[in-house]
Length: 377
Ligand SMILES: *Cc1c(COP(=O)(O)O)cnc(C)c1O
Image (tube, rainbow, N blue to C red; front, side):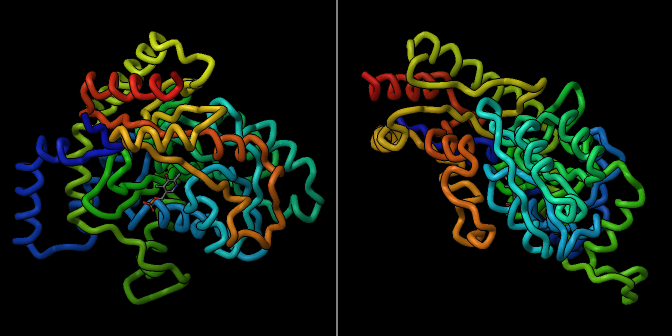
């Protein structure tokens, strides 16, 4: 049996007719950039995320950059975030000329720790505190960060809150949706995300009409009106084709999410029956709606050997992420070293993502757990 980490083909086969029909329409219209298809997706994503406004953009990475630009963050400014995330979170901060300030994660949720964030702020000089302008909590693997705590820190320090919700569309914290709890919510339609395009795409959500207007102007080179530029933006546009395909997939998202949640439930049962409690830590569900972009287990000893063994058994896995941001070579000028964020470093050394995509069969899930059991036996 083969169990790939992700296989998008079975999902495509269920929507192929709809996708080909809309593709045909767009090709016939020769209308490719922004326009009514993008506006329809923006309205539907705003509804889905329970937030007033949404702006379609070129990628999740650009959603972060555009949000930072709309918040007026640039050279000299500092932005608090997690060292245990996809590169784009920290990369966006540096791309706008600001400096990332890292605080460690919680070992159970892998999300930014409120206590660590508070301690980092408390240790800052007055000058640094005055330069700290934003906080970017990441809803890692599909589970929201502790947003009450994040918003409290933001309020105390007068920070803009940018949720990196790239892995968390439809995820909830105390009944509120990812992307509706901060000033900005940043989403990615990278194909491997729960709501993936047929290429790159992304979305920024915001509850503020003022920020919405700014995002839209900056998305198109800062022009307002056309060919008149009060500010410098960029090309952060999403294609009509990507928007139309994402909007078809949005109608299925809750079904697919339910299938991921059911796979997670089955894994918990299978692991429970396998008696691997001492070896394998299962993902904690600390928030109210985990959408399982990833199902990430933790193995204190032998993670890399387990991964090798699973690969030989035709089970796909991935390490999200092997090198935390503070140890990336390109951020060496920040002056961090091993030991600075021990929880992030331990997670990087011990975590392993297992296949969780909606179309997996119960037999495939059982095969994965059986192979893990073999490895430890
Ligand atoms: C995928 C991802 C991004 C970037 O999204 P792209 O669409 O690939 O640019 C940003 N942050 C996190 C946490 C992600 O997982």
